[in-house]
Image (cartoon, rainbow, N blue to C red):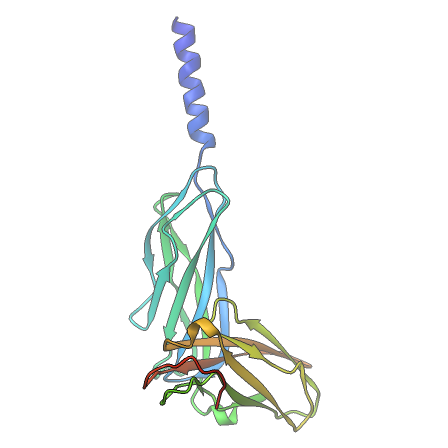
Length: 238
C-alpha cells in the first residue's frame, strides 16, 4: 500500500510538471517606420497558446497614456490564438519613439514584453526616399452617399527604381491597392478601399509598406474615417 501511494504521488507530480501553460507572440518587435505626428497607428500582435493547458491573459498594459489596446480573448485554448490590438497615438512626438506594451499570463509572474517603434517626421513632405501625399488618408463621409475609397500618391525622390510592398494590412477596416514599383523621380497612385462591413462606422487605423532599393525603409500611413449624415445602401465613391 505504501509503495502504491508513493507511485501515485510521483505520477501526480509528473502530470503537474508536464501540464504546463506557455505562450508565444507572433513578433516581439514591430517597426511602424517613418510616419507623421497627430495621427493614430495600429498593429495586431497574435498571442499563441503553446502549452497543454489553457493560457489565461491576466493583465494587458499598453505602455503609456498614448497607447491603448484591446484583446480578442483572455482565455486561449491549447493550440489556439488571440489578437492583441495596439493603438498608438503619435501626438507631438518627434524622431525615434519606442513603446513597450506587455502582458501577464498564468504561465508565470514574469511580464511578456512586446515593442513598437516609430520614426515621427516633423516635415513629412520632405521625407526620403519617398514621400506620401497626403500623409494622412481621410475617407470621412459627410453626406448620405457612402464614400468607399480615397487615393494617395507615393513620390520617388531617388535616382533608382524602388520596390513597394505592403507589409501590414491584416484585420483592417480597408484594403489597399499599391503598385509594386515606382521609377526615379516619378509618382505612383495607391488606393484605400473601405471594406463593406466598415462603411457604417468611423475608425482610425493605419497600414504599413516597405520600400526597397539600395536600402530598405518602412512607412506607416494613417487612415481615418468620420461619419456625418445617414448611411444609405447606395454603392460608389467620391
